[in-house]
Each structure stands twice: as C-alpha cells, then as structure tokens.
Length: 303
View 1 (cartoon, one colour):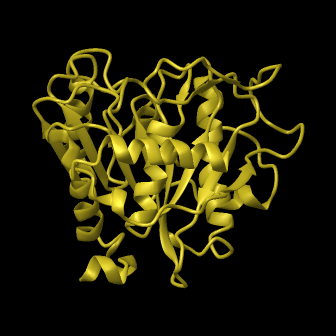
View 2 (cartoon, rainbow, N blue to C red):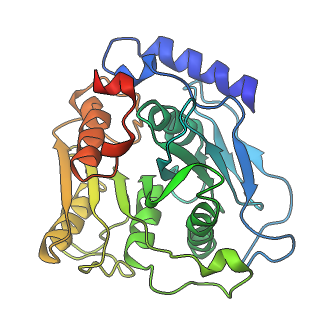
C-alpha cells in the first residue's frame, strides 16, 4: 500500500494547499504501517464473508472505497522521531456500513494525527451490512491496542476512538457499550479494558431515528468517555442525532464539546474549504485542554 498511499497523499496535499489545513506541512506517518489482523485464524466470531476484499471503481474524487471485508485488521501509523509514549486514536472510516472510505476518512486522518503527536490506527471493519461484526471488530481492536501499548510506544491511558459518519456511530457504540464484550474470550488480549479514554465523532450518522431520542443501543451515562463532536447544520440527515447525543452527554454530566458550523455538508473528512475546515485545530485544542495531548506535544508545536 505504501507507494499508492503516498501518491494519494501528495495529490491530496496539492489539492488543498490553501493554508486551511496546516497539518499538511507536518511530517507524514510511517510509510509502511504495521498491519495486524484482529482475529486468530479461524476464530473470528459472528458472520464473515467468502471471497476477496474489493476496491470499488474510482469515481474521480480521489477516494479509495473498499468493501467485502472478511479479514478485519488495523493499520498502525506510529509517530516518527519520538521516544516518549504517545496518545493513540483508533480511526473508523465511514461508508454507511457498506463500504469504507479508506483514505479520506482513514489514512489521511492518520497523517494528521501523526502530525500532532498521536499514533493513528486505522480500523478496517467488516462491511457490507454487518453491524454486529463491525462492533466485535472495534472491541477487539481497542484490546489489541492496549495489549501492545508498550511495544507500539503508546500511552495506555490515552487511547481514544474517532469515527466518521457510520464510523462515528460505531465509535459511539463503543463509548456507551464497554461494560461487556460481544464475543467469547479468545486469549490474553481479551482481558484488556474496552472503554476508550475519549471519543471524537465527526458528522456521526444513525445516532437518532426518532426525533428527540437516541437510537437504541447507545446508553449514554456518567461513565461515557469525554467526547468531541463535529457537525454542520446543513447535514440534514444526521445533524439531529448529534444534537440529541450532545444533550444526553450534558444530562449525564460527561465532558464534551460540540463544534457546530452552518455549512459543510457530509463526508468532507479533511478536505473542506468551508468554515468546518477548522475542526482539526479545534479538536487538537480540545485534546490538549482535556490533558490527552498536553504531555505529548512535539517541540515544533510548542514554539
């Protein structure tokens, strides 16, 4: 994936070199990520697929869309040139639980996370149409990250989740359903804690199906981790869900912030030139304010 990935990054940076995305000038992630399959051979719980993973034909928008994922995995992009343990974020691309927008909402996000001193871990979860399998995948993923924290130079108390659209829903599920695993214990990895230390939800989908009410399966309470939400008013299909989720966090007295803008639509990742393009800087400031990033800021960022 290395050469193709770098070509996508170069093309992306050139296309947005307007100054809105300051992170594009920072160091890129490791050219070769560490790929880890989530499940031991022949022990994946739940429903799988037969046949190879597919990359869908290009639509001319520089988005890699993959589907038919039958070997869920994580790609670990480590922060270069640091000896100090870093925070880590498991990144969940969106795609309506049918595909994954793997570069726009995955590897490009890892680039930005690396640039601010965070290990980016891109989750390739089961699609299409396998919400139960996807949830098992993210539960296994956070346990693997905790289990390998020392080896991967990660601070074990600073491991969060971040999701876009359907990936935002998946991240919210983990944030509110961490008290019990959805699959039998397989090995020592599964002895690790499921609760993320923080969550970042970027234009999350499916958080509310009935006006004014959270969707089933999102039991927000006072143990829900601190949460940063990004959304725009003109994302008519999903903005109501973010507002309901924010209200639930407030009612439970969970630390949260809601970066809300008028326009920007849905599915922009880091590629917007509208007001919402400020969300990465706002998110970085929030992480620092909450103490998840303060001890890990690079010397360049301190200047």
